[in-house]
Every structure is written in C-alpha cells, then in structure tokens.
Amino acid sequence: MNVANRYLVSFDTRTAIHRFTDILVIGGGIAGLRAALEIPRDLTVLVVTKESITESNSSYAQGGIAGVLSPEDNFNNHVEDTLVAGDGLCDRTIVEMVVREAPNEIEKLVEIGTKFDEENGQLALTREGGHSHRRIVHALGDATGHEVMRAIIAKVKATPNLNLWDDTFTIDLLTHGGECVGAVVWRPSVGVVLVWAKQVILAAGGCGMVYRETTNPPVATGDGMAAAYRAGAELRDMEFMQFHPTVLYVAGSARYLISEAVRGEGAYLRDVYGERFMLKDDPRAELAPRDIVSRAIFRTMERTQHSNVYLDLSHLPRDLVLTRFPGIAKVCRGFGLDITKDRIPVRPGAHYMVGGVTVEPDGRTTLPNLWAAGEVTSSGLHGANRLASNSLIEGLVYGATCGRGAADACRAKPGLPAMVPMRFVANEDEPDDRLDVADLTNSLRSLMVRKMGIVRDGGRLDEAKLDVDFWCRYVLVREFDKRAGWELQNLLTIARLMVESAAEREESRGTHFRSDFPQHEDATWGQRHTTRRKADGDHPDTIAPASSHN
Image (cartoon, rainbow, N blue to C red; front, side, top):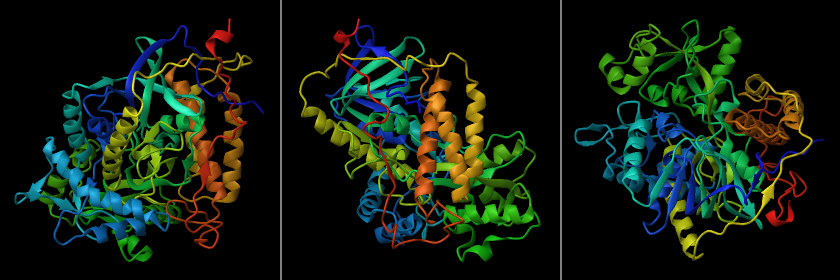
C-alpha cells in the first residue's frame, strides 16, 4: 500500500520564502479573529485566511448566538439544554464554562459595535430547537453572522499589531521535534511561504464540503483538521456530523440554509400531502433537536417517496415573518416563493462538524505549541450533537481563551521564532497520469451522502471505507500545485477518519445513527470517545537537515 506524504508539497528552507511572527492564527472566522483580538499589542500576530476575510461559516450564520440574558432564564437551564442535545457525551465542566462566559462575550460584541436586533430598548431574544427559553440574540433578522463579523473585522483592521493575509491557503503545519513551529502556506502572488511562529492558533473551520448536500460555503474542506492530523495531533469524535434539517431544495438553487429560528418562531414541517409529521415523532415537535428532526424528515421522504418536505409559515403574522427573516424571504422570492403563504421545499444537509481536533479546556491541542478554537475542534461542549446557536459562542469563548494562552506561552519563549533547517521531498515514484480532480471530488461527496449520511449501517460503511481507501492510495501520494488538489487530499483524509469512526461506534447517539445498532450502548460507550491519531509508522517524516542534501 502506498504511503501518504507527511506534507502535501515539497520545500527546502534554503530556497524558500520565509515569514516570522510571534503568533500565527489560521482562519478568519469568529474564533480566529476573537483569538487575535485577545493577544496583547506588544506581540506580532499574523492572521491567514483561505479567501477574503468575509468568507467563512461564521459570516453565513443566520440564527444567532445563545446566551442567558433574560430574567426568566438562568445558566442551569442553558447547561441542561446543552447536555440534553449532546446526548450523554458533553463534558459538563466545559459546558458550564462556556455558558457562563457567554453573556460577557455578547456584551463585548456590543462594545465593539455589533448592532443586535432590539425590542423595547433591550436585546431581542428568540428561541430555537432544543432550547427551553428564548436566549438567542440575532442581528438584521436572519443575518447575525454577517453583522457580527462586520464588527469584528473592523476591529481587527484597526488593531496595529494584527497583520492579515487574505487569499492564503494553509497547506500544512510545520513540525520539528514533536512541536508545531509554524505553517506551510501558499499565496497566489508568491507561491509557497514558510511561516515560523512561536505559537499557532488553528481556527480553520469545518468540513461540510465532504458532502454533496451542505449549507457550508466552498471554503469548508477540512483543511485545518487534515493538516493537524498529518502533523500528529489527535482528532476526536469524527463520526458526529450534524445535519441541518432545513436546507432550501429547489432545482438550480444553491443549498441555502433556512434558519433554525424559523421553526423557533413557530413554523410547521409538513410532508408532500400537507400532514404535520413532527407531532408523531417527538413531543417537542418542530422544536426537537436537529438530529431528531433530520431523521424524521429522512423517514418522511422515504415514506412519501418525495425528494423533500416543506416548511409552512402561512399561519404566522405576515409582518413578523418578513421582519425576522428578510434574507430568507429575498432568496425564496427569487424562485417565485412568498414565504408568508407558500410552503418552502427543504431537506437536510451537512451543516456542522461536531468532532475535530481534541482540545483541553484552555484550548491546547495534543501537539505542543498548537492551540485550536471553533468548528475545527472537539472541545466537549457539543457532545454528540450541537445545540443550535452554541457554536458562535464557543468560537468566542475558546478564541479568547486560546489568545490568552498562546500569548502567555509566547512570552515564555523570548526572542524571535526559530527557523529550523529542513527539506521535504514528496514521493519520487508519483504517477505521471493526470487526475480529474473535480470528478473525484464529486464522487467522494456523493458517496458520503449515500453511505455516511443521516442513517448508517455497517455494510454501507464497509463499502465506503473500501472506496475511500482506494482513492486515498493513489491520491494522497501525489503532489499537486493547485488548491483544488490539496482540497481533495484534505477531503479524502477527513472522509476516511469519519468513516472509520462511524464504523467503530456500534451504537446510535446524537447525530450518529446506526440502523443496525439503533439504541444507546451505555455499558460499552457511555462517555467514551472515538479518537484518531497518526500512527508512528504512518506517513513517515522524510525531513532531514537541509545541509545533508545536495
């Protein structure tokens, strides 16, 4: 069997372009930028983003940010709602920490200029699936992420010690002596650059593009998770991909997210015959957690042999619908749908990776000098299923925590970041034939929907593993020189980890449902996590001091 490369590209420190910074932040979403803003002004910070700084999952977040801000609510309520959604796999200590920090982080957003929606001079609060109280702050009706990121980006650009590189693809994390020492990045104007840093904060987002049906933007190809895995960091609970129940399903349309808040405000789910089916599946009906709603939709689509179900807002006040959901109304209007009276065709789509790089309560990963925050991580907050609107607050809390921790660790290492002489050469027996990268990427994404989707079983997972392993054998040994090739390699790496983890967990919990193991198996699994870490003999490190090569 061919062995995957430790790095995706060849490099030599004698001829490479170098950049030095105290702290490198990988990712320009809410977690990465919150981390950057927490770092003291006497330390240099470089933030690299894959595309424009405005292009991240955070910017597309519709529903809002969860936090206890109402006198009718309390921390215990928010904690318990999170634990229930997490289906037995949350770390209660982490949940309590994040929930208690949430109001402070929301207040800091207001202080830097975020304009949340208000009612009677107070922050307007809504409710989403799985929440027992109205505790979701939102902005511009259904464009919370856009407004929050607008304010944060403005603050970042006004902070003198923060340098920003847009359109910079992070290919790999640099390691030496078992520690992270920076990253290999690619910039269109200059090519490969080696960035050396005393501390690295990974906030590269999720991997929703591993599925054909997804709410994620094209940038979400699991680059950070895959790079961390190649560098030797531990990944955890990769079987838990959360599917959003309601994604607009219209021929010719991008898969546009229809916010959880639509059901929070009282919308009904109906099948093709007009029947409101959620009442039979769960006493919480449309306000049940996302995994329950997604599976109910899946079963309904199979029962009716119809490609989707429908969201119905026609019984709600017209003014409320148009005020709360102007963005959704505009998108649907483009397809001739009036959401105040027409039913919206929807079906589930991959939305949020609950698993990811394992982090400690302070944001440390298992790889020294590497910190991580946001969707790229498995922190213990979400357990087996994320509670709606808990992700942005996790990004804020862990971003701030990582920023403080990395700054303290950086000060413990006086002087400039050290460059380590090294040279890496990709496999010399790389095949000469060209690959159709786009076709293989589409094949992988389709396979994941069919065999690693909302409902899984051992037979289909075994078939998926055979296909993914076959593709990995001849794709991961190659050296590409363009982003599409690196993204394919990252998607294959993540898909393999997801399928292996799903096959290992022989029970159903949270977002992971096995039709051949439909019940909890607490005696075997309980609080047990699945973990993936590169074996010592896997992906051999062929780096050697540059001076030893001609």
